[in-house]
Image (tube, rainbow, N blue to C red; front, side, top):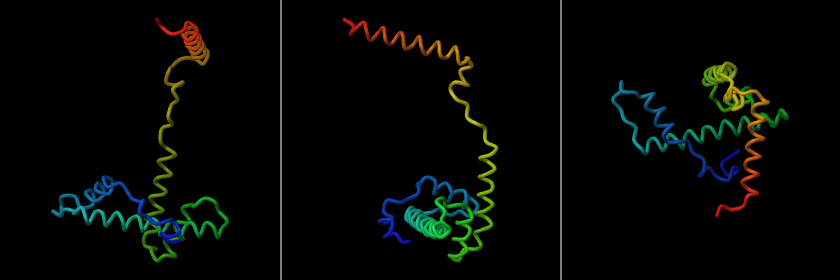
Length: 143
C-alpha cells in the first residue's frame, strides 16, 4: 500500500514534543549535540513513513490470513519481509513488556466504589436529587 491509497500522508504526523523527548533521551548531554528543528521534522516524516510502511505490510499479511485484527505476529512477519529482521527481537520484547504492564496495572475504581456508600444509599441519594430537581422545575422560573 502506498500513501496514495491512504490519500496522502500530509495529515499524518507524530507529536513534536514526544519526538523531542525521545531525541533528548537518546542524545542526552554526553555528546554535546543539539538536534535542529529541520532535522527533527525530517525525523518525524521518516518515522511516519516507516510506520506506514510496516503497518501497510502487516495489514496485507493479516488480510491474506483472513484476520480482521493486526497482531504482533503480523508486525513480526512484516518487518522480516521488508528487510528489517534485526528489529524483530526488540519489537517483540517491547510488546511483551506492554502486555505485562497491562496485566499488572491497577484496575481503575469506579465512582461508585470510590464513594464508599452502599448501592442502596447511592440510590436513595439519586432519588432525592431527582425529587429536588423535579420540585425546582415544577415551581417555575424564579421571580
